[in-house]
Amino acid sequence: MHLTFDQSADLARLFSLLHEEDEERTIRLKVGELLLRLTGSDYFASFVWDEASRRFARRLQIGMDEANLDRYDRHFQYRDPITPALKQRAAPTLVSAIMPRADFVRTEFFTDFLARDGLAYGVNMYCVDGVRHVGDLRLWRASRRGDFDTDTVDLLALIRPALSRALAKARDRAGSPGVPSIRLSARQQAIAKLVAAGASDKEIGRLLGIAPTTVRSHVDQLKERLGVARRSAIGAALAEAGLTDVGTAAAPKG
Image (cartoon, rainbow, N blue to C red; front, side):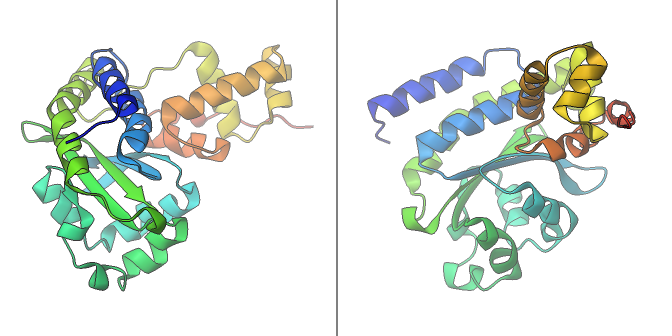
């Protein structure tokens, strides 16, 4: 496996952040940002398998469309011809190793879900702590880049043990396996309630006595913490993270 100077620097940053006591979603998001550069990927998504509901949950993404991922949550994860096999392997595996491409591109999963965002070639990795699934990484390239190679698989295999430990520790710090380690300050909670209720930055600023620019800064931080790209996805991400009490405020009238 050959790494350029920039890739070596990014890999060092990745291992360094795994020693920080970040929240579980923050770890997955930061790792995803670095892996996009390290692997020449265009898109990143990450989920955690929920054994109780038998579905992938707690998603986050970079470069993908939230509305399309909503369709994955509702429909396509139950018609996914590749991910169950990738999850069973757990170790980094190219999508092309699971199904011949000529067959894959004819599936509903590819034509009606992946192709909508331009996802063409993928590689998945699943992190485990014993038998507990603690998070996955799904990297995708647009067709112009071509498929991943064994260097990508080797790189992901290199980081997998340390990432699995970091995610497991983050979930244990949260106090209960399977519960995401998201903690919001009182101010963040207040803003999150109002955002989820549909309030504008100006309305939130007036209610909380802060400038709209300060509200926007807090909203950007909330999106980063929750791993969502759009303001409108904050309420759903909070509910999915088990913080359902955060989304109970009513939007201001008038």
